[in-house]
Image 1: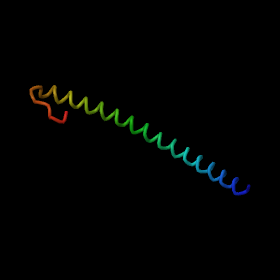
Image 2: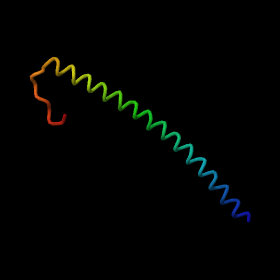
Image 3: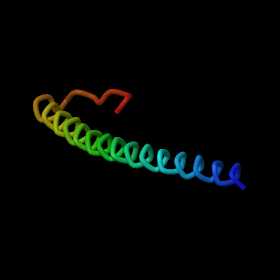
Image 4: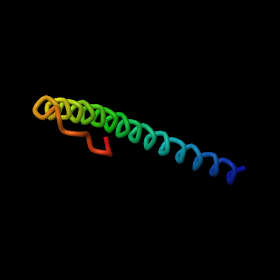
Amino acid sequence: MDELNQRIDELEIRYTHQEQVIDELNGVVAECNLRIARLERDVNSYREMLQSLAPGLPESPDE
């Protein structure tokens, strides 16, 4: 019975640790999503500025 209790304790510790890591990773992913959205807005803004400065230039194939 002691071995079973020890195994349950170890599983609870692992679960708690994994839960903390998942929460931390979720925060990192959320922060990355905000950064990506900000960068996308910046790129679109720069694209609009460039198009207004040189409207006759063709777009690159990457766009």
